[in-house]
Image (cartoon, rainbow, N blue to C red; front, side, top):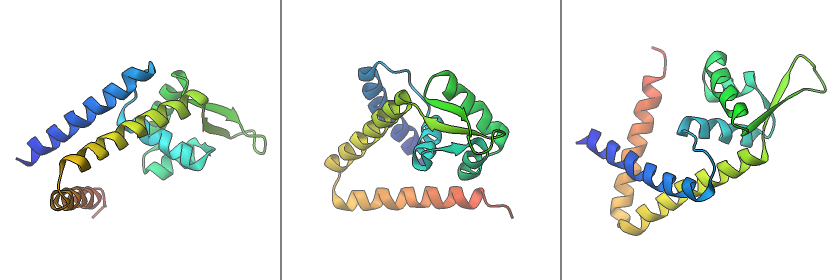
Length: 143
């Protein structure tokens, strides 16, 4: 039953996201790529090492995703003026635009859920998501 809930949640979110992205004409990005853009946006300018650390992932994993986002024109990589051994990552205009539309799709989805559920149901959903987040954090913690 829980798996069905997660699958349905994912499908409804995917449909909301797909509708928003189709309207923009921009290529779609994955939720993982969205998290990279979100972190780069939060930091404004960052390095690959700082990004990997903030996302709790390995540098090689971050390199693969960042390379794709650079290729697609969502982030730029420029040499640091202070330390020429370092390269800074930042969102391009296209990166800001896709981030805005992805975030808008997720907000529309949340508003739709709020409109279609009672306060009691919303509290139950919040509790369920808190359990998922908590269990995910516990499974990622070394023993």
